[in-house]
Image (tube, rainbow, N blue to C red; front, side):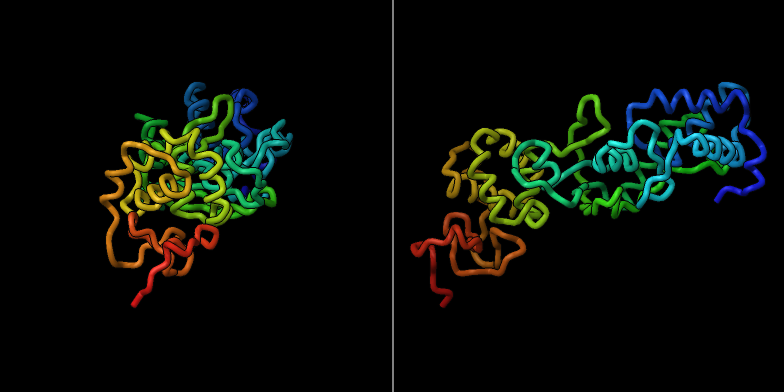
Length: 309
């Protein structure tokens, strides 16, 4: 918390306008304490001012006083920029976590794959250890030869944000270490899972994609037009169980043909307890081709059933 005695001391008269001008030119709706600290430090350096934690707090107090910045409810050390009160929680979240992207049902909505309007914002980001490694690399790239001096100044560092609720919207965060799963949206701070990754995530975590039946419905309706993207993503980034599930749904539910299907079929394993819906109970309705329990009621057919005995 800022020391009240600092309020009586104005921020450096040359530094504050430079920071305010940079914020006004920002295209994103929100900013983190680290981004503000970096801005104060680098603008101060250009004026040959030694930026300190105290100087940072003075600038912050001034920006908050004139409402160029507004604290964001549900986010620590994060601020909404003036003129961006209509920004979506997804846009804000992508500003606050530089390594997160919109995924699952939220990404399905973005790509027009679902007619549902999720009340939860689904995000994916790297696990904490990997996130912190990326943060260190980002700070090193941002600050270059000033990195050590910046750290010694006591200014905010890039830290993992605790995102659970933004502006009244509940946030569900998945952690996954794979890269290249998203695209930047032009003219926006949004990062959104690629269409191929969305279809892969539907089979991995159907609960976060509207449920398994909704996943089946979306595949039936949308898989044909997106087949190449789905096959490329599953082939490159899918585990063996992902290839088996995708192979079953694409060939036996959607009745689509593609070259990789025969290769994916080699991952089918007799025995074990592999299920189409990872969250459902194992049932005797079975695909002999894919060695998979078809535990989705709408896909049940008498000829597929077998006797466990």
